[in-house]
Amino acid sequence: MKERIIANIKKMTSILSEMIELVYQGFMENDAHYLNRALNKEHIMDDLEKEITTSIIQVFKTLDKKEQKEFIFLEQAAQHIERMGDELRYLMERMEIKIAENLFFSEMGVEQYKETFEKMRKSVNLTIEFLNEDKHELLKMILKNGDEIKETVEKYRTEHLERLAKGICKPRAANMYFDMLDFTGNIARHCTNIARIYKEKHGFGIF
Image (cartoon, rainbow, N blue to C red; front, side, top):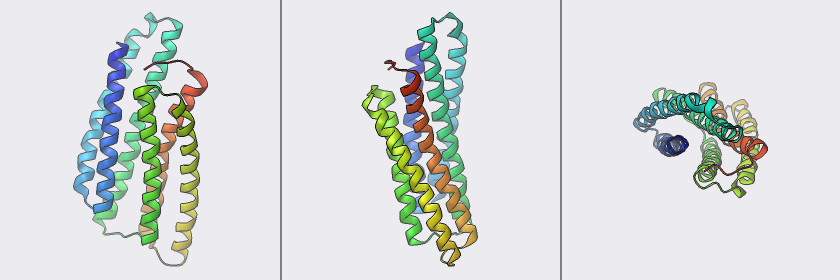
């Protein structure tokens, strides 16, 4: 049972990585087809998370305390990965509006968003590596990168407000931009949560 749950979590992380790449391509090429492909994968990830939850509920009462602790972490990890998929869906919705309404970001805005996205991708990749290989030294790196992306989002929100005030960016495009920054930061926050839960409450090898 445990092996099947871990295998499904690894499937979820693989789908998450594929979705992130498709979303980035959709943004860079201003093409909703990539976003539609990513959205189809999000549904698969939802189903996997439900299967994991159902499996854990079925066996939980038969487990000893140590096993229960392990399974609780597995469920929490699956939930956070599924929520990353939700944040990606929200992000895709904003990108689809941007494409449909022919909205444009300033050159500086695009570069700053790309930087934010890359930091998010780093958090996700570190988290996936941790879940796949149980390298505890990655936990500090995940937490550190999470702090950095939080600061980055706040900084670039402020700078974009300044561009909006100067008339460099239009209000409708700015609304999409702010949402995209927030959703991107939220994905990294879920990575931080996985690392923090494991580090503070689950000091054992699971994978």
